[in-house]
Length: 221
Image (cartoon, rainbow, N blue to C red; front, side, top):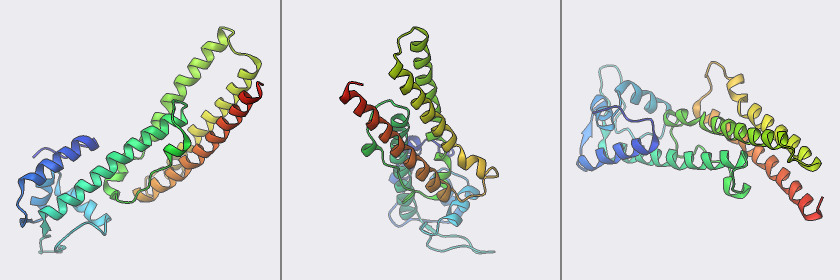
C-alpha cells in the first residue's frame, strides 16, 4: 500500500478506505497494522510511543509483537485526521483574518491540540506563519502602489504605518518558536500550543486596531 499522504484530505480518504476493507474483529501485528494504515512500522511505532492514548491491545517488547485491533486503530487515526483537517481550515481562516482578508476575531479563535496526535500535529505547524507572510506581502504591495499614485491621504499614511507595524509584529511573533527551538527539540503538541497562544495575542491586537480605525470612521476623522 502507498505511503499515507501528508495532505489531511487525502490522508483521511486513505484511512477511511482501509477501514472499509477490514473485518470488525481483525487484529494485526505492528508491521501489518502499519501496512493497512499506509505507513511504515517505524513511523507508526514513533507515533504510538509519543501518544499514550493510542489504542494498542498489546504493547510489544523484545521478542514480543505488538497487537492492534484494526477497527479501533483506524477509527482513532481517522478521528485524528479529521481533527487535523478541521484545524487546518481554522488556521487558514485565522491567517486570512490576520492578513486583513476578511472575517472577524470571534470567528477565528485559536484551535487547540486536543484530539490531534503529536505525530500528525508536527506536520501542521508552519502553515499559519507562511500564509500570514504571503497575505501581508500582498497587502504591503497594494498600499505601496496606492501611495506611489498619490491616493493616500494623511490619515491613510497613519493607517499604513499601523498596518506595517502589525505586519512586522505578526511576522516576528510567528517566527519566535523557530528561533527559540532551532533544533526542533520541543514536543510537537507543546510547540503547537505555544504557536496558538502567540496567534491568539495577534488576533486580539488586530481586533483592537480595527476597532480604533472603526472609531475614526465613525467620527469622520
